[in-house]
Amino acid sequence: MSEPSDKLAYFQAITGLEDSDLCVEILTAHGWDLELAISSFTTTETHAPPPSPPPENHAAGTSSDSAAVVSQSGSPSNAAAPPGLVWRVITLPISVISGSLGLISGAIGLGMWAAGGVLSYSLGMIGLGSGRGGEGSARLVSVSAVATEAMEFVASFERDYGTRGPNFVGEGFMEALQRSRNSFKLLFVYLHSPEHPDTPAFCERTLCSEALAAYINENFVSWGGSIRASEGFKMSNSLKASRYPFCAVVMAATNQRIVLLQQVEGPRSPEEMLSVLNRVVEDSASVLGSARHEAEERISNIRLREEQDAAFRAALEADQARETQRREEQERLEREAAEAERKRKEEEEAREREAREAAEREAERARIRLEKALALGAEPEKGPDVTRVLVRFPGGERKERRFYSTTTIQSLYDYVDSLGCLDVEDYSLVSNFPRVVYGPEKANLNLKEAGLHPQASLFVELNS
Image 1 (cartoon, rainbow, N blue to C red):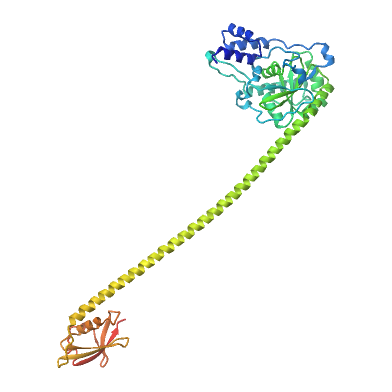
Image 2: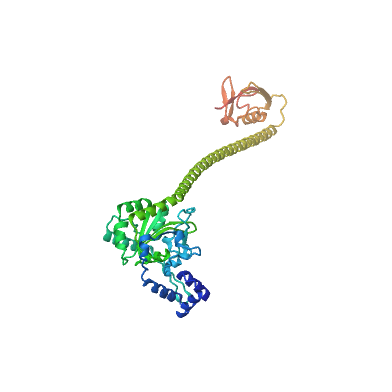
């Protein structure tokens, strides 16, 4: 942030000073060192005692609704001293708050409040510093620090006034506001001024009143802070507290803002506090009820969507399972069809191979038969040296031929083979009377030597 105009705008946003000339003078006096100028401005305010309430207002009461807090022009009716460093940053976006302090996402719809107008404040940074030379380095109050302050306040309050008072939460304001939002309650804020003369009596007689404490605990989330502590002081500036004791009722609003519903300044009796708080609760009942109803509807809608999503996922998973099953079944059928086709092709190829081999064998046998028929030569005419041979086959077929008596038994086998009447090759030529088997051992004997001349009757006997 090196430009003077940027520093001026930032200084005005933090300090709340509207007089730009005065802001320029302050920045110039500090050499346009933004951190030093802000520190000097807020240090001066920090040591300024809070204004005491005018005596005449005690009796009449100083309870004011939001319409009383802000005039038509937006200026407080009882203007407090200019707020200090951090909570003037309340006009800046909440997004700059450190991690766990971010809250108020979503919205609570706000109606017109019967008590009066609404004073809205943007929730800003909890602490800020700017480094020299334009190098910004935010020094933010950590969650543990504000929580420690809150717990110290609770312990101090209970030590001084007992445990009969409201159940102040031991956490920072932002977390308390979020807690009230989540529980659909308003946030009761008490700013404690230890040195103020009215503080002890107000705490003992009013805050620790059994009826008031019970009412606050039932209808509010309570947060308290000492104005002598960091966050309590910031809240006093933020809420423009001008008199003490100081109580306020706030709630989370839309667009990351809070709404000041009621503030009560100065001492009050338990009955007066009950009356004020009861009016605020009644006025805000419809808004909180609507917020609760909307939240319940959102939860119901979310649950319904989750159930619908679960049903859709279940249906989708069932469809996917069916699709997977259908695909697996289709793949199985395709595999079976492919396997059947493969087997069919194999069988067809086997048949073709067998047919080819059979044809080859038949061709080979035909060739052999032809060769053997050619080797036999022409059938001789009848004569004294010619033997007549009759061959009977197992099927009853009879073949007859003449051979020279010098023809060998092997020639008879060649003759039988050349006829092609047998599908087997392992057979023997046998005579009946007497039974003689003319096997391979007699293949070289001629017909005369084998006793088959001048004629012979042989039959073919298949060898098993």
